[in-house]
Image 1 (cartoon, rainbow, N blue to C red):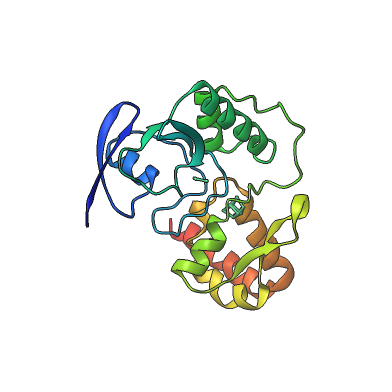
Image 2: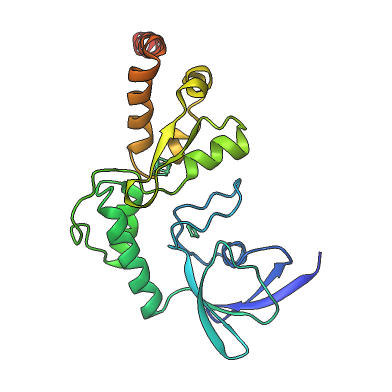
Length: 211
Ligand code: SF4
Ligand code: FES
């Protein structure tokens, strides 16, 4: 695999063909914030928190670092006034959904984002798609998906699949940057497959008693 030399924040970085700007930055210990990215999943480009500035042949552009492939002599800037203000705005919009998310609060501190700038939204889901993509790409189960579009877009467990698969898996729970996924699952469990809801409850009881 051929080696590609680029510059990130003034530092010469060696990358391999097929790497993204995010991969290259991380290999050089240069931090770029992400929300919808997961190393085991295909790049998604949903949250745009990873926005960076690239410069090629004197032309500057903003791109998603998790999607943009490295190329020779690329100049990348990961922190500028403009980038910071974009990240601040994205975080403020996300915080309207999930003001108590520890992951968002950490980033909010770094980018001085105001968690109360926008009116609170009814859904805690920030539509990162991590749960859906993990279930589809890694588990190949397709038990959770998006429904509706625009402001009404939300995740939805497919009861016929979730009833048979999720109670014993739940590997997507820790990926969720907010508390929404777990709540949505327990609601689906209680409404759509209540018999499993009691099985989970007794399992929880056994675990608690054993502890
Ligand atoms: S439920 Fe959580 S992991 Fe799934 S899309 Fe919403 S925020 Fe992301
Ligand atoms: S991490 Fe790149 S768009 Fe979400």
